[in-house]
Length: 447
Image (tube, rainbow, N blue to C red; front, side):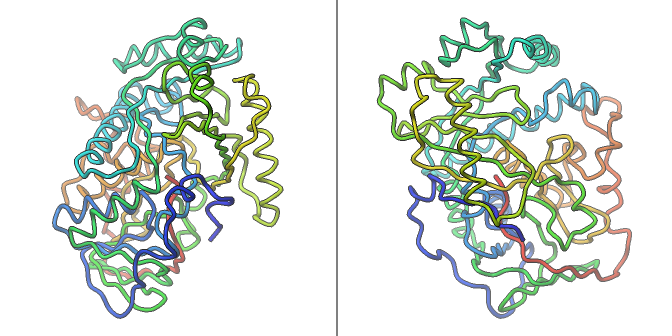
């Protein structure tokens, strides 16, 4: 399995995490649900399932919260990676609106849950600004704004003057969207795992799953030192790993780059960003900005197709250089800045920018939460909520928006506001008691 990040992210420096927080899985264990992956998706799922009285085991191949979760910039965004107009063209306006509202609700519920559990992860509610520096993109961005407004979605248009007044950017225009947030992803992940453990969940590190055998009635997971029997397994590895070969083609692996400046003086921060917002642009791949609690500016983007890790140091240096050049274009006052932290993260991109959540007819007793993209934290909470409902045999209609067969799900049920139930959802379990065995070495997702 590829290494999920390279370099040392800011969050790990701040977390000062010990060598291992949880024990190895040994012997034989029986639970209701086994979760493969100890990143933020697995952590949130462990909490929601254990809160519902369901016995849970989390199996992390290496160390919790230290894979793609640690590489995240942790923007809790309701906006999908693809524009509303693009989703509407692909799936229809009603389905696009339902997708947006599902992510909007997940953003709100995630923030609410963090506050209720009193997880100390620097949660701050933020507006986001989707902007462009390029005159040729203004018309398209304004069209996107009108598509959103026509669907009743929140947001307001920012003129060049207003964009500069709020964000200190001499761009061409932007869309301001309220109701987003930001967190420290490592602290959030560890907080959810602690909350899950206090409700009976068992968390295991350094416990890679070597083989999975599923039947109609359950699933067995062979780990490095034992075996876990469960009714179902929830795969929260970020993307389809090699043991799920038929699904691999649905994902395109990308490397993304992030840098963090030094703690900038307060006068400079006020000059750069008059209002504390999150920013992302219309470039493809896009760039994104946010501030940390201690006054650092985080800048991410410059995504490229994933390559071998053999030249990781050289690739990281090149990605950092591209980000610094872009940062100087956006904020000329930072032209001479050099980052104190920089890192590279691996993530999975899907054709429509949406995660895959739900079941697949090829894999009985499996629940999947994969392909989160740029707004992974929000998608993680949404996935955990939908999969809990699926496990309870009370699937929510929103699941079909993110199913594996949504490519044929553009038509809407009369009055439902969501696409027809997917083939994968409707056909689960039809294959009978035939055993299916897979080999696994999966760990945490990109979040």
